[in-house]
Length: 142
Image 1 (cartoon, one colour):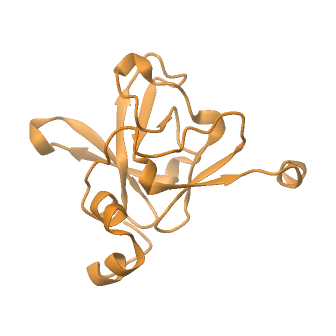
Image 2 (image 1 turned 45 degrees about the vertical axis):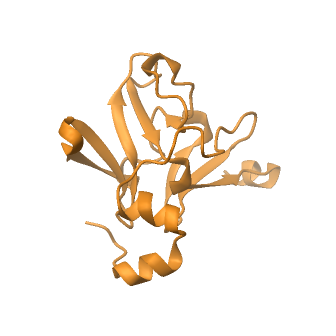
Image 3 (image 1 turned 180 degrees about the vertical axis):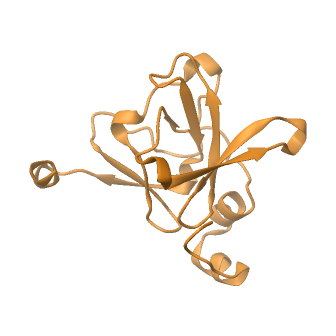
């Protein structure tokens, strides 16, 4: 159960129209529309709606084997309780939806993937994420 409870009107006020469509309406952004393939940077990806830490750059990988290029791909979540996995039978498919455990926002889906270091592929809408770069000072304190 999400920790953050807001009305539909509050979400519409806080999110852009496209963010609302994806995060609250469970839509999928067009492939390659986001810019979150982070190369040679260290940091964390947080939920754009509530700032919950979701993924780390060391878990991001190239998912070309599944043909799911165009969206950020992660082998694992930052912490197991950061997301909620929900059976998704929409559009006649059998998938597993990934949502933010803190606010309930739709992030994407998780699939089995032999090319992933963990065997799992978290295919996430870039519009649902913010990136926070880790600085040298951050590295010294962690």
